[in-house]
Image: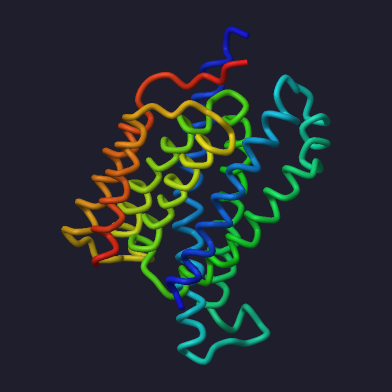
Length: 137
Length: 116
């Protein structure tokens, strides 16, 4: 298996990006659900309530991305030790933070504590994932 | 209420990770054909892992309904701590000291984000 290593890396990358997209999608979905409820717009017809329609769309898209990230993750688990691979998945914290604060749909506030905290988590991830970790069998 | 939901979701998602690893090692290792992978998805380990993911994700949506994702999501790295402990004590994987140091940094990061 000459390409085993690059397949593992590709699956790992896909899993990280898809899991971040999944989180942002699910949050956008819940945000719109809240909007729909606040406006008293919970109706049976999706067409008559744009927030409800968006809620369904974003939640579904988020769940699909999340599901795909889990499939890619299973392929990662075959190739790497869990204690090595799992912390790398936390790279998606940075992607979620940047997305949540920069995507107009969510427009969450970036605070110094959250920024430093997220960077600390990234440093922790780097340290926890340092060196080694190919599954030994 | 939000914090309790968050904690329950974290425990369920961590449990799923361990079950996925056990399932991958027992049922997926060395399998190449898609049909073999689909059959493996119906093994007890991976079915239980999927059940934990589904329940944990439903709780997670309830958390996201109540909280900024930039605040809630870092809490999910608690799963890193739980999974690291499970890797060491349940799966008998070797865990070097620098990985524990990383876990401590992650915990500090969570505490900082939690304070907002």
